[in-house]
Length: 222
Image (tube, rainbow, N blue to C red; front, side, top):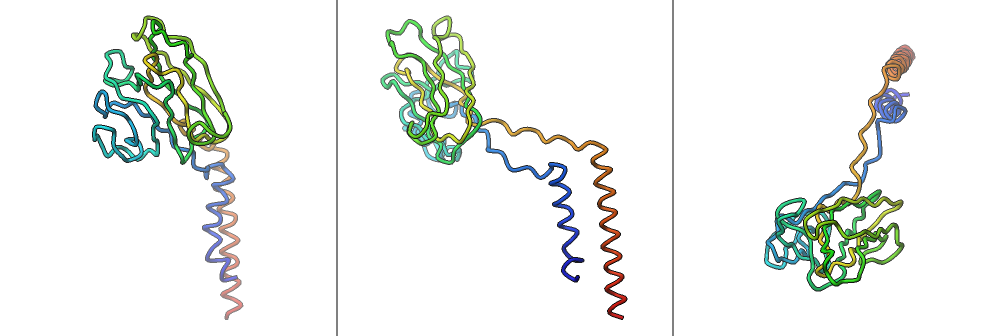
């Protein structure tokens, strides 16, 4: 009985919070990167994994994201000024996040419809790093209107946990900005007044039982 009287109150708190849905599991963090801290013409490399860009900018934020290919490029119509993510020579840019992300991947893109590249603008999300594992979702997009002057925003949703995103058709053709890994955590709903009233009555009732048990223990000790 001694153990019960000391620990029942904390257990009551956890039980009632869980019953009301207030003890929610933590959601995966949403991370948006916009390449604006890098120098124009600097390869991104490990900057968003606490490392540096190719021209020494850093250390960057520890977002756990690394890039294969991809250069920050200052551009007047970038959705987030001053830089876009671009590549003049490679048709693929890969972003890896080993810690994973879930629910969605969102981005802005702007393309050069006058480029001779025939590779479509395609974004794919995979369960493994470097575009490996299961293809969780993919989208193919048309060139933006008014070459390199108008951006579009897109969101891909998926189930499971992703570790990489592959941006295809990038060589001197399409640029990206505001890459957003994961969804924003949903706001917790406030408990209804009736729920709070029920919680208060439950707490009072169990509190009375604890007090009664304490008194019985004192009487038996005497």
